[in-house]
Length: 74
Image 1 (cartoon, rainbow, N blue to C red):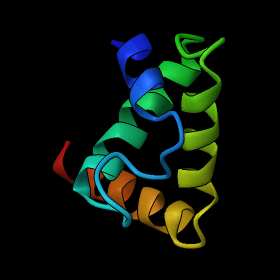
Image 2: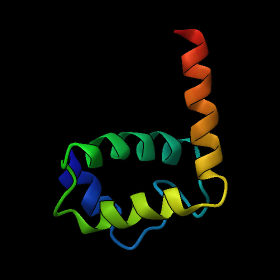
Image 3: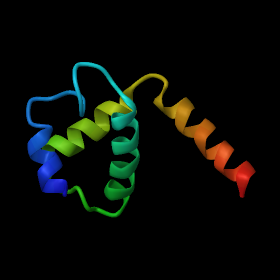
Image 4: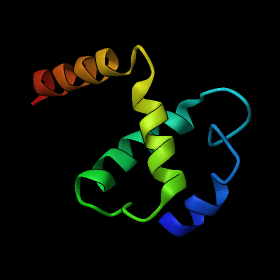
């Protein structure tokens, strides 16, 4: 599936359309896991997309909030 998404992201900034959507949030989360497990090595479009998503100014704050919410549920 990484190869399919790699081809899909060729020349695109976001998964769907010209703006970030929930599809980008979910995909970035999955790619984070994939990156931690070296599953997207060699996929230059996915690496660049992942880095763009996490470079967004509010990304670290939102990730921290999501992690805090998960810890409260557990």
